[in-house]
Length: 405
Image 1: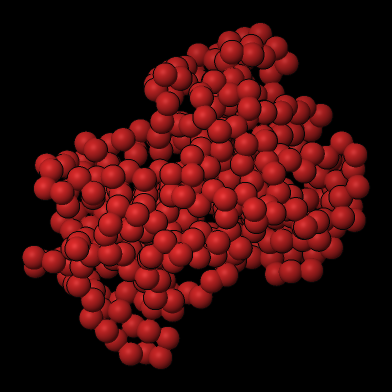
Image 2: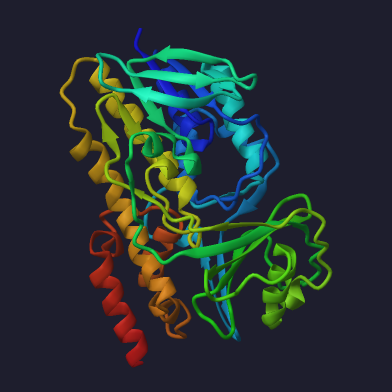
């Protein structure tokens, strides 16, 4: 029986582990932390649910009591627009959930264990060797003891830990400016009758259009709140909480919605979160999700890309272990990158203001909005959608039309 080691028990690791163990392979996940643990990336996209279903975890997720999500709501000053994911162009699921990632990731990991995946908690990969016939790993446990592991293949699902990119010198510049995010969970106490808890709220700063906020309601009366700024926009002054509150106060609508909010938990920050690599695969290994590339949180694409990479990699590995000829470049890296590049086009256009001009335009064509809605719902690999197949040229044309009107 072929043995696969997965580094990291987040969404891509647990999904890949479940898919592979259900195909009959021996799977061990090495996870540095102990779940549940805090993580951002809490507003899932409907495309994610297709992969959750594929892995056999749908019932566990649906029954967990997470906040239902059916779309996204964008606000800039007195302009606003809503996207209902069930009105998207692409076939497939049109609803999803907004989740506390600590619970969500733990549920996926427990489901993987239920299916037969062996998860070794609080174990950290410190050294790797891919020069021989089989990959070899040195792994340190919580007591500091080092063990030696051997596998037929290694999948790196370590997320922002980026274990193999660091150990194999695969890191590459992302191409995005250095941005900083301030974020945390609050008791929201929202009593605004116009607020829709079934959607993520994206608010553009009234004076600086490349500064934006997320507000992700949960089912228990709490919310995830965060803001993204370029590093030099808001110089450090005071605590993360004071910075976040000051920026929230700049926006009249957000200030009104959160007037009763209680900041009763730690506010965190992260700088320079965008990342890339020289290659998504090599002899005996492949990189999944954020271990390979992370763009930006603005369209909540991270978990979707992670799960897509897990699904692709599991299918290719199965064929490889069955003796079929596989090409990781044309069957994994390139297909995965096509969707990532679609998201990249829209992320670029968000920060330079072009996409904002399009979505806040008052005369919106329903068929075009449905195509863009598909991408916002995570269906960035559907090349039947013109805004996927020719993302940059289509978006450029749309923006020109909106600005000329």
